[in-house]
Amino acid sequence: MKPAAFTYHRARDVDGATRLLAELGDEAKLIAGGQSLVAMMNFRLARPRHLIDIGGIDGLDHLRTDAGGALRVGALATHHAVHTAPPDRLGPGHAVIRDAMRWIGHLPIRTRGTVGGSLAHADATAEWCLLATLLDAELTARGPGGRRRIAARDFFHGYYTTALEPHEMLTEITFPRPAPHAALTEFAERQGDFATVSAAVSLDLADDGALRGGRVALGGVDALPVRVPEAEEALGSGAPPGPETFARCAEAAAAAIDPPDDANGSAHYRRTLTRTLVTRACEEAMAR
Ligand SMILES: Cc1cc2nc3c(=O)[nH]c(=O)nc-3n(C[C@H](O)[C@H](O)[C@H](O)COP(=O)(O)OP(=O)(O)OC[C@H]3O[C@@H](n4cnc5c(N)ncnc54)[C@H](O)[C@@H]3O)c2cc1C
Image 1 (cartoon, rainbow, N blue to C red):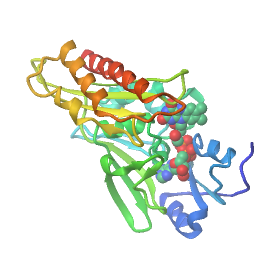
Image 2: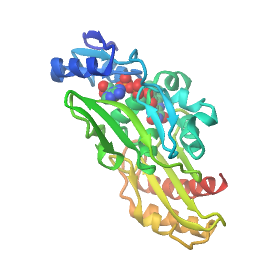
Image 3: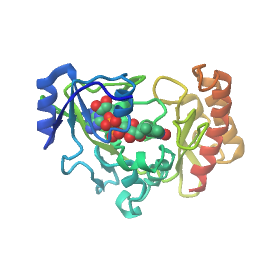
């Protein structure tokens, strides 16, 4: 199918994009890589009268680490640029982010799709949304009123819904701390599909290898990516970092969720996947 007619605008900078958003109102949408929006327009699920192309704005595709080890990713960085970035660009402890890119669609999608587009689109199984939730990312948005920072835990409101105001644009995502022992894994019916369930784990290990705590985040089990405190308790200080602890963590995660029952999988199936994927993510995080 073809999209409904629209007027194309090309923004030269962030101020220009947000000004156009404010001027054109509800009938306007930003377009970055177009890998989600164009599909929705072709299916007539979205019918913006005005498209504001932000793909040509300079200086928003950066990847850099600051002195404290935080990783800053420009909203226009593509999934492929992150996937293929040399290790020193991401800094030590952010390999989980690079490795997670391989799960996103196929090469052409990763080559055009952007980090900001993925987070703004807010699919509950998107890898960037899960990473942002696991790693306490901070999202920077610019609008006519200026700049504001939004914690990932406050950003996702539900299926395809975020805290962004209609005239705001994401400009940067910050991952505040390295996570050297972290992994993301998932299951999809076919390679390149959105995940049925995805699991991400970050382990906090002392120098002697003892477990000091950990984080567990899941995608595909709720309307937004979720942290699972019940599973994180199993990774508490002093627990031996091995199969029994990881199995307890996975069991707690499966018990804590109330996943949807839909055409992509029953609730029981998603719970079973959760058990397997959390165990696998713990093992992969430990092996890093
Ligand atoms: C076949 C297929 C398979 C895919 N598989 C996966 C997958 O496995 N995992 C996954 O995560 N994704 C997947 N995707 C989606 C892909 O990752 C997209 O790149 C991403 O969701 C959107 O990024 P984009 O730059 O293309 O955004 P666009 O499609 O251009 O825009 C998406 C939405 O975000 C808004 N937007 C874009 N940029 C900004 C910004 N900077 N600030 C505010 N709003 C903005 C737009 O207005 C629009 O509402 C798949 C896509 C396809 C077509």
